[in-house]
Image (cartoon, rainbow, N blue to C red; front, side, top):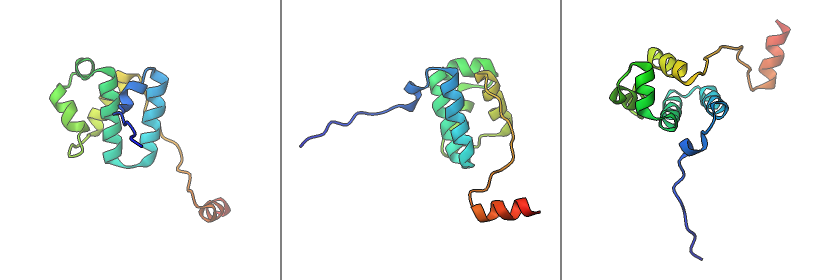
Length: 108
């Protein structure tokens, strides 16, 4: 049986601001800097790298470098891109996944 596989580009699924916000929130929750940078790159492609460069005042080359696997996504770049996307970066208390840790924290 021959199966046909197609390339999937997640940027194509990011058609609304809400979808972008959810996608980025999920990426940020991983805490993995490389994964977050890659997700930001996907969003940048969905919005259009040239448009994003214009709105942030950063060059397309700088954005591509920041979002690459070897890139260094700085806080300054992250905040500029998120502002251009209309997405906020917020903080909340960390929720441990280990129930024993939760009980110990609540006993304090």
